[in-house]
Length: 414
Image 1 (cartoon, rainbow, N blue to C red):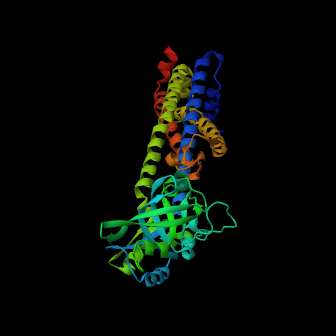
Image 2 (spheres, rainbow, N blue to C red):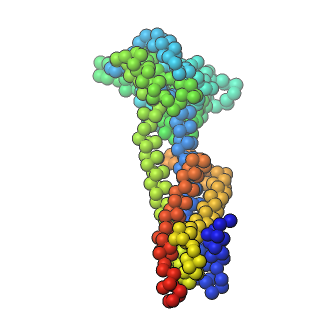
Image 3 (cartoon, helix red, strand yellow):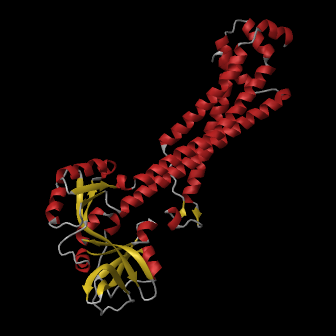
């Protein structure tokens, strides 16, 4: 061990008459600990929220969508085969999209209606994997099993808003009606609720309703047309969905155009990343305050150790060695605080991951009961690095002042 580190270690163990400096040293370490702990917890919660939101969005919608300028298109079977042969595409399914009103026996609600092909939709969208438009009267007691009506699957929250159960009848009202002697008349058709789906996203669960694509075509008078095609890319290419969507758009050319899930949710994820950066900067100010305490501790120590510094310099210690002594002490304080902060932050993250918060509601926070927490190694590394850099900068001025002391004047007046 070099003498700089030996002396720096001795200075960390102050004598009783320097207990005030010891108190400031303790407060500096505590400040760094609290700052790092707060950074770890907040960044982990925000990373968990972003990751959870991505998984819910990817579970409730396709990775890539294909549509046509000017509205619906026919001969979609040919387009489907062409799209599925493009590299990176795993599956594709046609869909019809429109807005309707749903009326139950007691309530009315607006909804986004999607006509899907149940055979292929489950391979593209996870939440539609086990969807069925067939009503099993033996499985459910409610509803009139003798009434023949096409099936409809509702989002869990939408069904709750309408007050319906499996087997209940609801009326679907579409503005795409027909012209009659009295003018334009909306289309109204009765459907039987055959099931519910839950994606975990309130936006989807509270507004989406699914019917068979053939029923949607009849209801909207679309013949053999569809609104578009939804596409699922291979798992390894999820974050390259924009590249695959560009490839699909170029392959099919005008009037077809493609969008991807990253582009569709760009504003949301950009806001999340910006918020994460801002929170990192704000919470780093706590560490900065602790760094000022470290600087204060070192300055007071330099003033109290003037004679010791003068003797060391008289014995041949260089300015660089003196600087090392005080930088070492400051970095030890910062390192201890950082390690304690990381440990406490990790413990709190584990507690939060399993602690149920009943005040959370899905229509506001997207998730319920528990906070999504994801502690990423890169985030921890950045927090540790930023903290140690701040602590190092805080030691430079006191160390420099100590190295500039004149040994003759210090011994004379120390």
